[in-house]
Image (cartoon, rainbow, N blue to C red; front, side, top):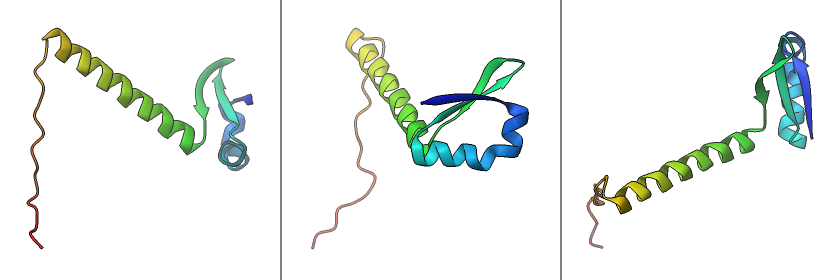
Length: 84
């Protein structure tokens, strides 16, 4: 479900807009001069987008390693294990 609203209207209705994003998952596209400029989405949706971006970055890096363009970086433990 999505809606559109001018930025000027969103300034006065930001509380209900964010409530709908958080509780119902509604995406509200904010428009400037009739064109979509931004969107209000739930934090969960934004975090998912960030994770997808990280996944694409990881895939690109692995492809570069496979093709020989980059060398893998070895994992180095930065903490010492405790012997208990």
